[in-house]
Image (cartoon, rainbow, N blue to C red):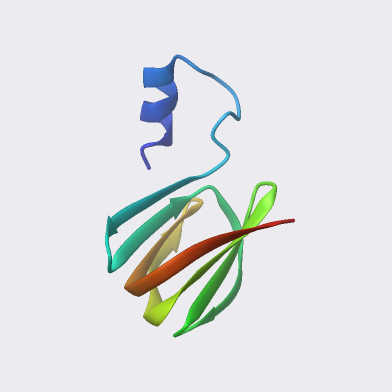
Length: 85
């Protein structure tokens, strides 16, 4: 996604940005740097990231697209919570 562009602008190399999260609107969310999908249902999407897990809660949640370490989530986003791995 845009992770390489961010690294270039910051003048950084390596794994300083193990993941990024971008809210495109209240109904769209993009997370880069995912390692795996732990669970998906219409009220909760759980993902494993480098060093953490993230839970996206809301209504009518679906994974619209996934690939290359990026996941695109659609639905009414209610919250994003992080857990230690």
